[in-house]
Image (cartoon, rainbow, N blue to C red; front, side, top):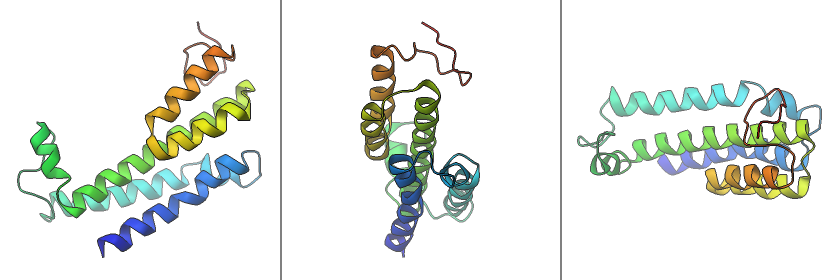
Length: 153
């Protein structure tokens, strides 16, 4: 059952990533990726797994976030692992959507955006790192994460 849930969750976010990669300006990309639709769905799934782990005891008794051993125990149970995985998927997609919006707003070349999105999908923070460094080096923006499009050195 856990494998089926894992696969279903992965399949559910994949279309959003495909839209970011191949159709960032398509009229349906905005409603699917740049609204609260996917984050709300992932948040509900996350809350469900969190509830199973905390309220219904579907976790290792030593699980927690106070030490490395406790975090290891947290991820030692399939529900804890799925909870963490949904957390990664939600935040990585949020970052990918931000990269896409920021790049369109600032006119950043797709040659930088696409590898950044692929890395964000596969390895989370490395995609953001590549995008921010590339954006800075190409003079498209400073280090600001300001949504207004202002360039801050």
